[in-house]
Image 1 (spheres, rainbow, N blue to C red):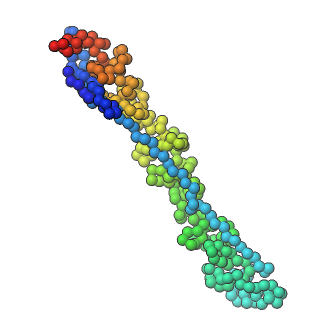
Image 2: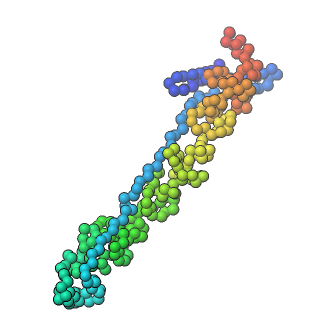
Image 3: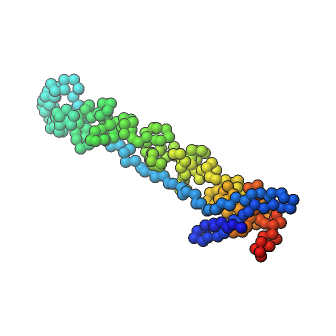
Length: 281
C-alpha cells in the first residue's frame, strides 16, 4: 500500500492510497493512478484605471474691440496709417494693443489674447489646418493652438476597441487606453465594475465568462472551478466533490480505488475486510 502526501496550507495529509485489485472471479476493478493532489489558487482579477484626461481640456481665447472695426486684410499695411489718422481726428484712442505674435506688427482694433500673447484675429489660426480660431475653444500643444478636431486626431490617445480618439474620461488597462463605454467583457459585452476583470490573450473578461470559458471543470459536477481545487486521477475536483462515487462520503485522507476515473471507497466495493486483514499481517 502506497501513501501520497497532500498539501493543504501548511499541513500535510495522506489522501490517496491505491492499488490494482481484483474482485472474485478475477474481474479487474480498475487501475489506480496515484497522483499528488494539490490545491491550486486561481489568479486574482485585475483592475482598470479611469482618469479625467487633462489633454482634453480646451482653452478659450479672449477678444477686445476698439471703437473702430479691424482693418481689412487686403493692403493692411498701407491702410493702417490712414485708419489711425482718421480715428485720431475723430477723437478715438488709437493706442496700440501690442504686436501680433504671428506677424509681429502692431495691433489696432480687435485683438485676440491667448497663450499669453496677442494676435490679429485673422492670424490666430490652427497650427495644422490654418482655420481661424476666433474666440472658439482651442487646444494647446507645445505652445501652438489647434482646433478641436485636429488636436484630437493628432495627439489624443486612441481607443483600443474602436481606434477613435478619446475626448473625455479614459480607461487604462492591459497597457492600452479605452473609451469608458468600450471597455467591456469580450464575451458578453458587460462593463466591468469594482470586481475588476480577468485577462486572456490580451482580452478582458468578466469573472463569470472567464471561469466558464477557461477554468478547469470539476471531475464530479463538471462545473467551473473558481477557487481551490484538488488534482487527482487525471482530473480536477472541487474539494467538496472529491467523494466516493457510490456512497458520496469524502475519500480525502483515506484509501480509495479508482474505477472509471472516479474514486470509490473500499467499503463500497467490498474490499474493506481485505484491507483490515492486510494491516493485521
